[in-house]
Figure: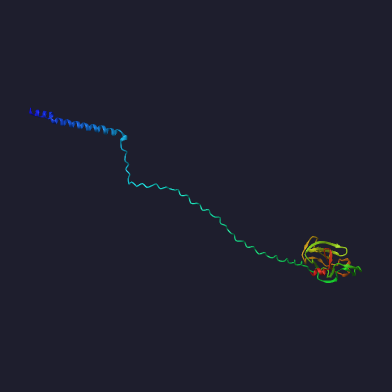
Length: 238
């Protein structure tokens, strides 16, 4: 009975009010946290911006202006002037004097005694015809059959039997010279058109010269230069 009274006095006295006050405070604090804390959680705008943690912060330096360097100007190669050495002008060789061409080889057509001299300008006595007449050659005596040769190189112009001079060979040479070999035996060693050299056999000594038969076997040898009679001695002496 006393215990029930004691409990009633606690709840009915000052303790009751203290307990009530604590309840009110607890409710107020809870409402406050529910009101403000809930709104802050619901309003994302109210959240403070997240702080990004920067490791090893570096003191900001003023931006450096980067200037693209211009490429170095390409050095223009200067043209190199190549100076070629002057070519030495070869010395002008003096033209050697033109030596006169040596005379063509001229040989005597026959070795023997001259029995009739050259006389183209003055008549001489002819024992065969017993008259006076010019003699445009020389008569060289030799035994019949003796070899007669060409006095110089040339071309056989003709081979014929002349009415006065008998078997005759005519050879043309350079520079307008022509040699005649008359009184030969009928058999000769060349034909018309043959090229002969000096000393080549033309024929043999005969006695076919009708106008000079009194002289016996011999060669009548004559020379002309541009159709003009020339002393054979002068021609052979060149």
